[in-house]
Image (cartoon, rainbow, N blue to C red):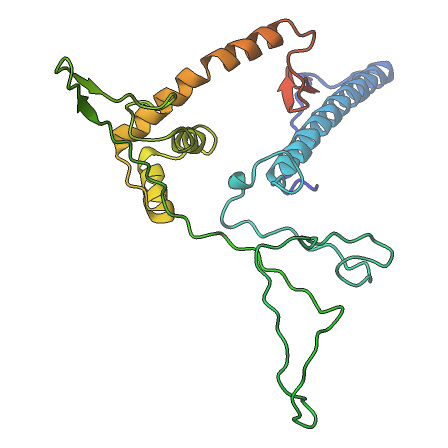
Length: 262
C-alpha cells in the first residue's frame, strides 16, 4: 500500500551560534547525522507498524462467509457473491467409474398396475400375452390418512337378584383421556423435536390428518409425554454421569486471541 499523505518531518536541533572553528563544525555535523539516523530509524519503525495495521484492517474488510468463519448473515446486501470456480473441463454429474446411488425398487409393492398395449403400433392388429421382463416404474405415495376413532361403551346392567347396578370397566390400558398414545407421542415429537408452536401443531393435525385439537390439549399431550419420559431420561442421566467421556466437540472458538477447539 502507498500512503497518499506525505509525512512531514520537522527537526529542531537548537543551534544558536555558528561554529567558530573547523572542529566545532565537524562535531556539529556528526551530531546532526546521528540525530537524523535516529529519526530515520524511528520513522521506519512507525511506518512498519502502520503498514501492518493497514494490512490487517484490509484483511478484515475483505472477509465474508466464503473465506472465513463468519456466518452468511454477516454478508451485507451490497456484497457480491464469490466468483465461481473455474471449470475443470469435466462434464457435470457423476464421472465415469463412479458408483451411483439410486432409489432401489420395492420387491413387494402394495399395488401393481400392468400397462399393456392393446394394438400393434405398426399395423394395428390386437396384441395379447405378457412381457416376461416389463419395465418397472414405482411411485411412492402417502396413503390417505383418516383418524381412527375408537368408542368404548360402558354398559350399566341391573341384577335381578339383589337389584344393584354394575357398570362395565374399560379394557386395560384405556384411560379417560380423549387422545391415544400414538397421537400423544406425535404431538410431543412435533413440539420437542421440530419446535413447532401450539398453533402450528393444531393446524398440521387438522389439515394433514383431519384431527381437531385445541391449544390446551397440545399442552396436556406434552405433559403426558414428559411424564412418560421421566424414567428413561433419569436412566440416561445416570449412564452419562458414570461415563468416562461426557462430551466431544470440534467447534472452534477464540481464547485470548488464539484459535482453539474442544
